[in-house]
Length: 355
Image (tube, rainbow, N blue to C red):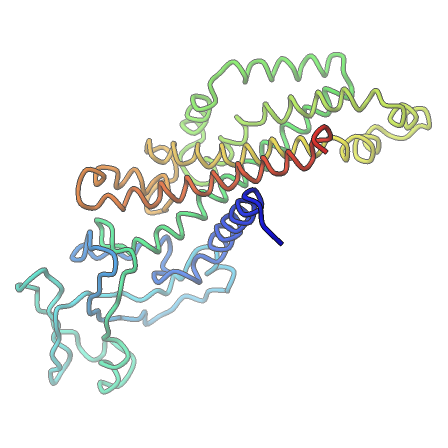
């Protein structure tokens, strides 16, 4: 069977969204640096290129904090090891003498007693001193850039997802109530829609963020309560239309409750166009989060997001480390393209006129 270009793009887009969802959920199980926010810093190896390798000494925590699998999945490994980059080391009678990493000679020498590790001196070299590689290099703080990129996807993806949930709850509820009950309720809903519509969304989001504060929860709430207008407008117009159908009027005559009529008769007939708007809002929310993080009012350090990574590294675009800003920007572009293409496919599949 020959695949058309649309089918190929459909499979590609679906695959991209599935991959981003997977790494957003299981990011801490994938990344080399599973510390909270992949925030293991080592200034000595800052701004190293992709594929950089260095010898490290690993120092495991002596009093680990009990953590469940779900806790690690959400917050990362709080019992992460400390890594010291070194040029070389030498085994002494009372410990291991290391020379910390430095480009060229001149690293600081430091003696680590054998008691630093809970194992015999014979096993220290084989278990805790080894070469460590950085797939995409490091940022200016010496953090693993690949780990930050993977964990940044979960912020961008889930802020978009939670924002859509908030906007759907607000917009769908108001739109259906206005279209079904009409009268004063409908006028009140339209009044709110016109007020929110008259203010640029990005300005409203910025004002809301500055009011609620900066952080993950505040961002998706702020985006959600400012992007519900289109959902409310579509829900209202579709409800107004469906309410005129004979099966809805018959349900009212029979005496069914308003809740039952909305749930059983109206909701199944208006959900498709509403879902299309929600998917579009998903892409818009990701872009808004990226813009807010770039402006410095999005998620705050040390939390990573693709927009935050662009802000931290955009000045490298004109230097020799341009990939630090280009890679997260490209990730945003590919994800948005995939979502928009899936929206168009879904719109075409549910368009009665086309079918």
